[in-house]
Amino acid sequence: MHKLPFYKYRPFTAITLPDRQWPSRVIEQAPLWCSVDLRDGNQALVVPMTLAQKLELFNLLVKVGFKQIEVGFPSAAEVEFNFLRTLVEENRIPEDVTIQVLTQAREHLIRRTFESVRGAKQAIIHLYNPTSELQRRVVFKKSKPEIIEIAAQATQLIKELASTMPETKITLEYSPESFSGTEVDFAVEICEAVIDVWKPTPDNKIILNLPETVQLCTPNTYADQIEWFCRRLKQRDLAIVSLHTHNDRGTGVASTELGMMAGAERVEGTLLGNGERTGNVDLVTVALNLYTQGIDPNLDLSNIDEIVDVVERCTNITTHIRHPYVGELVFTAFSGSHQDAISKGMAHYTQSQSEIWEVPYLPMDPTDIGRTYESIIRVNSQSGKGGIAYLLDQEFGFQLPKPMQPEFGQIIQRIADHTGKELKPAEIWHAFFNEYIDAISPLKLQKFRISESSEDEQVTCDAEISIDGNCREITGRGNGPIDALAKALQNELGIAFELTAYYEHALSRSTDAKAAAYIQVRHKGTFAFGVGVDPNISLASGKALLSALNRSLRQDH
Ligand code: KIV
Ligand code: ZN
Image (cartoon, rainbow, N blue to C red; front, side, top):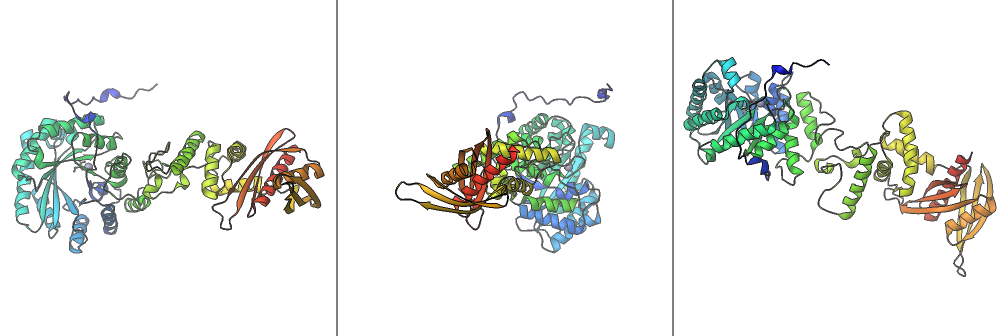
């Protein structure tokens, strides 16, 4: 076996926090959300968004309910600057939405950033400089005090420029970028230096954004970093602690959730997780994770397909079929045992009329986010009778009796094995129709008349049956229409069979109020079901009986 050079890597140093509190905390409310789709998301695209795409995405973010939206890095590119000016000059920013703009800690970039927000009612100026040990040593070759000086000077300039723009309420967000690789005591030190210059107040708190710029360790360690930071920061009550996780280790959502438990109250991320490298944390997942714990996410995700559509169009990135909550297959079961449990769970949920969603294998009701139940169960060679029966009921209103389900399940299984493909509902319906409803030879019911006698409560049935095209009139008496028809078939046509099961129901989907009947017969030692459909229930039953006989006669040959 070829061994990977694991010795190139070092384990991350854990945080010493033996009395950590976050593991026993429970998230009880949604955080303050900030979308960074138009900045971090856009920066990571092969082809950055056009003005039109940015506007479309901005409108979606507003519609979804984001109150803080990072709209770009206006000092970095002309199109970013122009987008911001379009938003301000065309009055496209709703009163209750605050735009956020990113800037590096460099004078000319900060000045340009202020030009870009001129005229906005409120804005968050998001200042960052990298603080990690690696960046200080390798990229900037600067000492800790020098790195602090960069942040403090930039803050001072922002403060001065903000005072020249009284018509815009400026909030400062400071990110010790690469926080995840920064010594926690240094992160506190630099943030306190920024606070000392900015002087936040309870009415105008500073946002301290602690990015997991690159994921370097397990999410519990990030949570330790956040709790450590929150506990040591002197002016904690004047700061909103914010999370900004990426997904290098595939744990962006976990880091965010544990970070909230550790004391953060604000979360930055993107819809569906676009962003640098493996992306930013997916806010849809975080929000729906809260939702499925009974917490109002404060975001309108009721039309998830629209969100996917717009994000895909603007980013040119397609959504994976397994993407949490939104992927094409995430509410779908193919496996028989899962389908069986889901169909029982769905029946229980509907019948109990409970307000609480409890369906095995489905952590949430797909209709809450605008998906339908159609895709819950899909059929291929892995599928089982329960799922097939569920589909036939949901899509076509046929409630297969339980003892009939294995028989039809095997028929579908054979087709799926043979084709090696998924069977769509229409194909399942065709198989059902051909096998049962259209089983009209050799025996076909041409006429069927029932008369009741008041004397002995028996009924007489007069039927015309065509046998391989030749008509025969038969008569029988019994204690009901089906018993009478069975007697006629047994006595006059000499078919030896026994009626073993009978079921019927109205077809709710049918506009002309049809009934479906299911009859099982035993003929020459084997059992077979038949199905009949007709507005007249006696006729539906008669057809079902002949369907069962035809199927068993065919098996005979
Ligand atoms: O990932 C990051 O650290 C960033 C900062 C600019 C907040 O995007
Ligand atoms: Zn980022």
